[in-house]
Image (cartoon, rainbow, N blue to C red; front, top):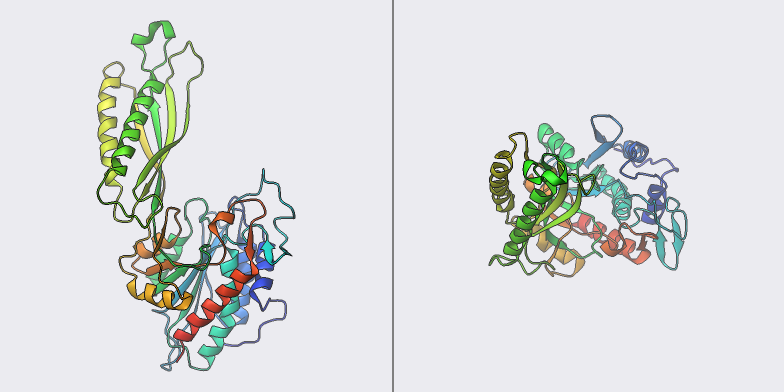
Length: 401
């Protein structure tokens, strides 16, 4: 490995963040320009980044390892993954004070789309890489340092599973993972999972004067929605709540509904979506099983009138919860580095759940506030970037011989 980095590449986290914001990586577009830029940086450091692409080859993840060298041979398993997603949410419909894809520093804050969510953490991680490479060159790196950059986190955490599949195939088993979602550099040890479902109710149209001969899709959808609301209420009354979460129970919520063509026509189709945000110790069966039982009951009623009617349930998204069950040692390490052992758990979901599902102890800790994410004039403070830089430097010291 070599530290002969070309002069085009930034040397500070602020400069890296300005560069990264300049890449328009909204989820609906390709992230390849950013990924290929980071790939070039890694290669100039003497590293060997691995890319995994989506089926269309329009997007890619990047995974790179600074191998441990303290024992005389390069070791790639174990160590810590620094994980971040490269995609950002759209800016359409938002009023910005400056160009969202040209970073601007004002009053101690750096503005731009992705500044906190979550290119700020990626910038700090890229700034750390040369330091890790030097330790490896000097045979002083006891544990490998990994960097994982993913695509399409904002639209269902679609990229990270490809990274994890590739690691399994190559026999690389990291010990820890730190996901740098904005947490104001506080440690988050768990988050809820998110599952999104679409329910399609297929009825039978007739003139509204002949309603007994029809099957009203909206009416049957409303019965199922009412059941979902009752199920949501029962979730809130369970005795296994977790009061470290701001909403201490699992939730169900109907979000969209469409149906009907005219008041005098019995509708033959109604579709609605709902999401389930589950506590880490609860799975899908807690809601899917009773909902499917209710659907079976309603189908019997509908098909007694017309056998071609019925209700279809389809899962659109499945982002697993992040559990703290296996991360006690990592929590102790991170708590010491941020000088705060508070237990924080959040309702929003991240790729961290996919890492914990893969058996990798994971916490969230990154610069900026989640309150700034997805908004116009998104920003991260320079103070938060400095704190993240220091945090990662101290983390690297714990991996030094």
